[in-house]
Image (cartoon, rainbow, N blue to C red; front, side, top):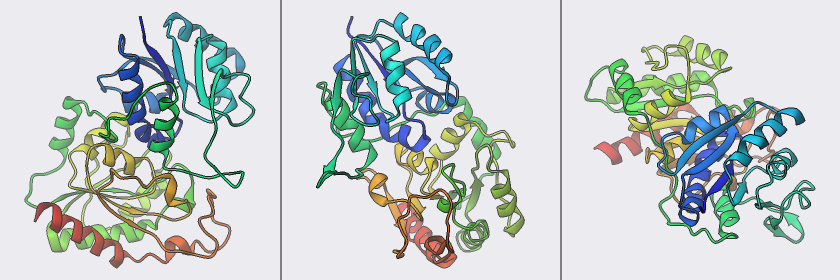
Length: 339
């Protein structure tokens, strides 16, 4: 039997960008759906895809004893190949402990002895240079004969959860607009909550938009700040208990998502939902690909892109972006998409 394992990326956006590579990997090793290994959120994000089967969940930063236990579970799968998508030493060690015959990953962080099929990272003049993450993942699996089908990112939403979301959001003729003001990477990637609120209010007043607030665990302060600043009520579909299933279901029914450069952005791309992405500290090359509909709003600053989770100066890459700029972008896209 010819089938494969995949160790998933850690960040939700990277997992979404990994789906073209997962699909290609399964077409190359089609006898059984992929067994995926990763954090609970990563595994939940790819749940429901037809080529994803068994799931082995990992805790945050697992100790060696936990890695050995998970490796034993992986060995029982009897896969011929494992694609190691994260760059970490720990991910490669897990693949080595699992004794999968073919272990493919990028040659980074001293992992050459743990992987028997390594791919050199993209370099220019000897220095590693970033590329769009979906492209990086596709190039990894291409090294073992997996071909891209060009369909881009994809995710699946549970129909029952979609129905629950639709019951929470009131009916109306105006567009359904999601607001995702968080970013797990750090505050440097977060636009100001009061400016999200100002955009939501103007869209409601000018287009009768129904605005849905999407926040994740640990983003309660951001959620509360936005709710305190907004004049018109926002709809919250997760009842204060955010889950990946609810996130996927909610984004799948939107007409537009307004977000930072974070996981929900790439979930929207996977569901073919247009986005207004407000980008601050991170380099666009990591996340800008050919599959996205919408606009990216950013300003060039002399200190960026810094790639830092927290700003050490005045955060002008974000404070320089006005609510009117974002509103006009959202209005333009909505008029184009739904008339």
